[in-house]
Image (cartoon, rainbow, N blue to C red; front, side, top):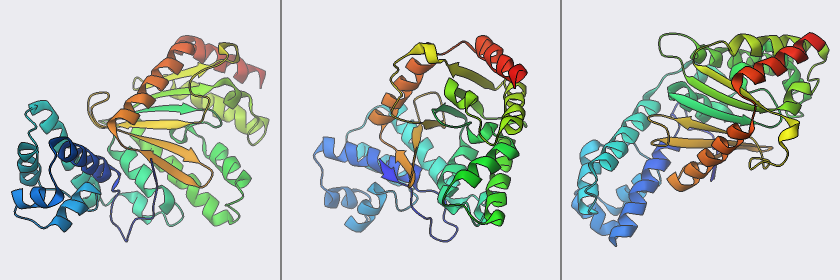
Length: 293
C-alpha cells in the first residue's frame, strides 16, 4: 500500500504508473535480470528503469514490448493488459479535468482523477454514504463534523466537488457502480432527521439507475470479512484485469496497487455482497427507514 501524495503542479495521478512499474519490476525479478541489463535492452540508462519501475514517468509502448520480450513474457493477453495500463496512465497524466481547479480538494486529486476514468467501481462503506451518492446537505454535515474543516468556503468547495463527481452516474458512458453499505450508515442521524430523510430519498432514486447496484449489509448478518474498514475498487477493464483499491484512513488515502492484494479486496467485496440483502430487499429496507424518518 502507498499513501496518497500531493501531485506536483498539474501532473495527474501516478497510481496507475506505480501499478505498471510494479508489474515490470516483478517480471524483471522473475527473469533474474538487473536494472542495467534491462536498460541496455531499450538503449536507456539505469535511471530510466528506476523511474519506470517506480511509476515516475509515462511509459512508451515500444519500451514495454521490448522489456517484456527481454523478460521472457510470452503471454499476449498479459502484454496487452500492460499496454492498456500504460495508455490509461498516459491519459490520466495528460488529463485536464475540472478537479485540478478544486483548491481544497488537492488531497483527493488522485482519487477523483482515477474515478473519472474508471469503467466500474465497487465500494464497501462501513461509516458513511459513498460520495457518488451523497446529497449536498449530507456532504455538508460530514464536513462540519470533520475537525480538519473549519472554513465555510472550504466546506462548500467540498460539497461542490462531490456534486460534480456524481456526473459519472449519468450520461453516454456512466460508471458502473456497485455499493454495499452497512445498515448502521443508514440509521446514523448524520446532520439530523431532515438531512437523513433527504439522503434516504436520494438512495431510493439512484437505486433505480440501470448502472447502479445498491445493497445493504444488515445487522443480522453478524461477523463479516470487511470489518477492518471501508474501501473502493476502481476497475478500468474487465473485472479484475486492471484494478486499484482506495482505502480511507484518518490521515489520508492509502492505495493498494499490486494484483495479488487487489484480487484479495475483490474477494472480500464479493463475500460481503453475498452476505448482504439483495438489491430489491435493500431498497425495501431503505424505503421503510425513509417512511419512519
